[in-house]
Image 1 (cartoon, rainbow, N blue to C red):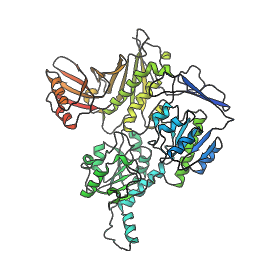
Image 2 (image 1 turned 120 degrees about the horizontal axis):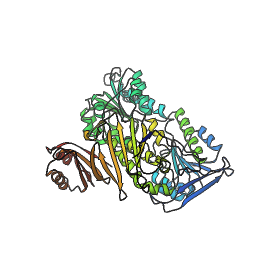
Image 3 (image 1 turned 180 degrees about the vertical axis):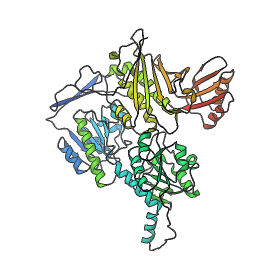
Image 4 (image 1 turned 90 degrees about the horizontal axis):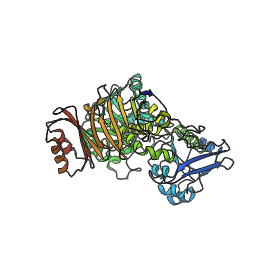
Amino acid sequence: MAAASASSTSLFISKTSPSSNLSWKNQLPLPSAFATISLRGRGSNHRHSPRLVVFAMDAKPTVLVAEKLGEAGINLLKDFANVDCSYNLSPEELCNKISHCDALIVRSGTKVTRDVFESSAGRLKVVGRAGVGIDNVDLAAATEHGCLVVNAPTANTVAAAEHGIALLTAMARNVAQADASVKAGKWQRNKYVGVSLVGKTLAVMGFGKVGSEVARRAKGLGMHVIAHDPYAAADRARAMGVDLVSFDEAIATADFISLHMPLTPATSKILNDENFAKMKKGVRIVNVARGGVIDDDALVKALDTGIVAQAALDVFTEEPPSKDSKLVQHENVTVTPHLGASTMEAQEGVAIEIAEAVVGALKGELAATAVNAPMVPAEVLTELKPFVVLAEKLGRLAVQLVAGGRGVKNVKVTYASSRAPDDLDTRVLRAMITKGLIEPISSVFVNLVNADFTAKQRGLRITEERILLDGSPENPLEFIQVQIANVESKFASAISESGEIKMEGRVKDGIPHLTKVGSFEVDVSLEGNIILCRQVDQPGLIGKVGSILGEENVNVSFMSVGRVAQRKHAVMAIGVDEQPCKESLKRIGEIPAIEEFVYLKL
C-alpha cells in the first residue's frame, strides 16, 4: 500500500477544460452562444442520451415574471431578455405560457409543479425563487427536466432580523394589544404592564444570517444572548458575545426564544408538548422563520397553562391561517402576515439578487445560489452511483452522532482505491458527503454546484485523503471513511483511537454497507435505519433485542456484531425497516448488558 496523500480540494466546474468530464457547458464562444448538456429521464435512470441545447444570443431568451418583482430587477432582466410580467396566473394559465419561456421567476405564492416542467417541453432552463425558501418548487421535477433552480438567500437578511426585533419589543410591551384597546375607547394602563428586555436571556435558535443579526441587535438592547446551531462557528459567536449551547440548555434557560431555524424533517414541530415542558415558566417566543417548526396545538396549550407567557408570530403552518385559528385569536399572541422581508429596501435587493442569478444561469454560469443538482455525464454517475449513495449516508450517519453545542467544523474524508488520482474524480462524492452532513439540520439543498460554497458559509472544512491500493483498478473505490474531529459523540463507541467520530463504508454487490464504527468492525446494509448498541459480549443478547423489536412488528433487515475480543465489549449494528417507538428503544437501553445505544435515521 502506498502512502496516502492528503489534500483540501474545492469543487469547481471549468467551462473551458476539455478534460473535465463533469463540465456541463460546451466550449462555444460567449456571448454569441452557449450550450448546456442535461440528461433526460426520471431519478437515476440515465439510459437516455444527453441532450444538447444551444441558445443563440442574438435571439433573446424570454423570462416570465409570475409575481411582483422590484423595478430594479425588472430593468436588469430587460437588458438581457424579453420580460413577460404576468401576475396571478392560474395553474392552467402558467402551464400554457411556460412552453414559450426560458426562465420563470416566482415568489412564494406560485406553485412550480411537475406539470409546469412537463408543459415547458424542455424549454424552461431556470426557475428563480425571489426569496429563500423553495417549498413551492418541485426540485426533483426541475432536475429531471434539466432545469436549474436558483434563489435569493441574502438580500432580505436585515429586514427579517429587524422584524424579529420589532416583534420581540412589541410583544414585551403589549404594543398590539394596547393599541387595539385604545382604539376601542379604553384606557387600561394596568392591564398592559410589560416586561423589560435588559438583562434577560434570549435564545437564538438557528445562528445563520438572520439569527446572528438578531443576536447583534439584542445585545444592543442589553440582553444576554445564547444560541443553538450545530454548524455555527464558535469563534464568530464568541466575537459577538454569544454563547453556543445545546438545544435543551437553550430552551430551558431562556426568557425569550427567537426561532431562525429552517423547516426540515428534523425541525418540523420541534417546539412540541415535550419541549414546551422543558422551558422556563413564562417564556416568550418569536417566530420569523417557518410556521411548521412549532406545533400549533401544543403552543396554544402552553399559552393557556402559562408555560409560554406570550408569542409573536410572522409565519404559520398554513398561510394565510384560518380566520377561527385558536392560535391567531389568542389574546397573548401578536401576529403579522409574513412581513419579515417586506421592506422597500429588501424587496429591491431580492429583485436584483434573483435577476442577477437568472441572467447568469441563462448565460451558462453556475450560480452559487443553485439549489438543485446540475446534470452530469451518464458514465460518471453510472459508475459512481452506489458510492454516491454510500457517501451521503456516511455523512448523514456521522452528523447524527455529534453531541454538544460545538458544531461540526473539521471533517476528513478518506478514499481507498487502486486507481491513480487522475482516474478517480471524487468531487461528486465529496459533494454528497457535504450534503449528508448539512441537509439533515438545514434547509439548504447541497449539490455539486454549491457544496463547497455551502460548507464554507458554515465554517465546515473538509479535507480529502487518498490511499492508493495495490490491485485491479476495475472498481473505482474500495472504501470511504468519514471522520469528524473535535466533537463529542452521542455514541462513545464511534470515537476512534485518535479521538474522532469515525464511520467507514464499502459497496458490496451494488449495495452500500457500513463496515466500521469507531474501532469496531461491523457489516450492515445501509437500507432503512440503524440501531447501534455497545454491549458486553454475551450469549442471548441478539435474541433479546430482536424480541423487543419483533413485539412491535419492526422488521430487522440486517444485524452485525463487531467485538474487540471474546466476552469483552462489542458493537451491534441493527438495520430496521420501520422506526421503533420510544418505549421499545427505552426497553433496549434497559437491557443490563447494553451500555449505550443510538438510533440513526437514513
